[in-house]
Structure formats: C-alpha cells, structure tokens
Length: 170
Image 1: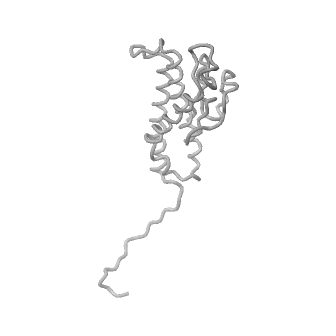
Image 2: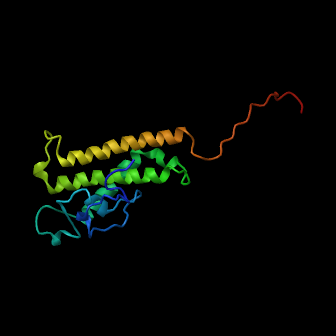
Image 3: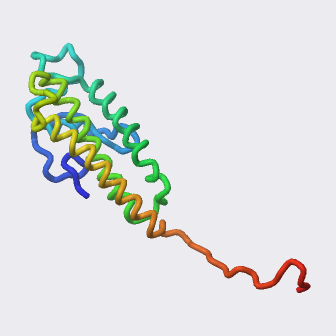
C-alpha cells in the first residue's frame, strides 16, 4: 500500500522543495508531503508572506493534518492493537500517512481554488484527493483487520480443558 505523498515516496516532485519535512501528528505527515501533491498552490509560513489568494499557511496545513489524523485514528482504531514489533506495522503507518496527506491536500486545493470545487463536479482534483483519503482509509482498515485476524505475532497459549471435576481428588 503506497500512496502518493507518503513519507519516503521517491516520486515527490520538486514543487515541494523548501516546505518543512518535520513530522506532524501521530502518523508523521509533513507539510512537504502535502505540498508534493499540489504543485500550483503556495503553502507559505504566514499569511503576510502571500502575494496572491492562492496561498495557504503552514498553520492551516498543520491544523488540517491534526484534524484528519484524529479522524483517521477513529476510523482505524484497531491499528493500536498491532504490536509495535509486528512486521506489517511500519507499512501500515506509511499508508496511513499517505492517505492523510491526500486528504489534507484536498483541503488545501479546495481552499486555494474555491471556484473549482463544485458538488456537481465529481472530477475536480480536490475530489480525487479526497477519494484517495477515504478509499485509503477503507483499504488500510481491511489490512489491519486481516493482520489482527491472522494473529499479532505474539505468543498464543492454548491448553485443553481439565478432565477432572472439582469433586475428584488429585
């Protein structure tokens, strides 16, 4: 499960150059990962640095990363049941991060291009990004459920039921 914008994505475009790469929230999403998905929107440190209305601030992006991280955490509540040592856990974390980056990029694109967001236009880029987020969460949830169904890699103990009754002496 690799999503555009996930940490370590080798396809990150140079349009995201200069954006902060510091991980934000429990799923390590960065402003850089979000910016890599939307080349024609300026993500600026503060509103005073903007030259046009097609800009979104670092603070706004950080707020949306945190918001969608909470929503993802609710949708994927079983993720925490997977032990930290399970081999699938890093890949699932990367997929969650990529899905959140797509959701936040949808917010950013819609904020910068409100004229292009329409309920009748299901093909807008914002809608495509949002679909990546929601579809990604569904796919990740299916993966988590499968991992948990096949065991978490910890020790499992099973003993036969005792054959004696409480009335019998040892």
